[in-house]
Length: 151
Ligand SMILES: [Zn+2]
Image (cartoon, rainbow, N blue to C red):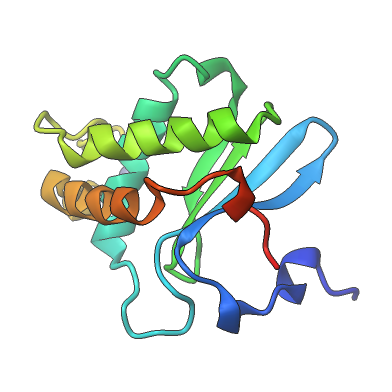
C-alpha cells in the first residue's frame, strides 16, 4: 500500500503548534499539535477525552460552527485533528486560540457527562481539559499563518 501523506512528515522535528495537514477539495485538515512527538510527555486519556468534549462543544457553538466537520484526538496522544470546510487559515487559527482560551477559563459543567451521552463518561474532568487548553493556548497564542506549514 502507498504511504499516506501524514507519514511523510518527519515527526522528529515537529513542535507544538497548529499545522495544515492536508486539503481535500474544500476541506482542510489541521493538526493541532499539543505535545512534541515521541516524548514521555503525552496527553493522558482523561486530558484528551475531557478536552474533546469541551473543544467539540465550543467550536460547534462558535461563529464558524457551520464550517466545522470534525474534531477529535490523535491516537498518538500528541494532539487533535480539526477538519474545517473553510480555508481561511488565519480565521481558523484565531478560532482555535479563542476556543482554547475560553476552555482554559471554563468553570461550568462538562457537556455530555453521562452514561447516556458518552462511551466513557467516568474519565471526564473539567480541570484536566482546562489545564490542557491553557498549555496549548500559551503555545499558540503568538503563532501566525506563517507557522502553519510543516517544513
Ligand atoms: Zn465522551
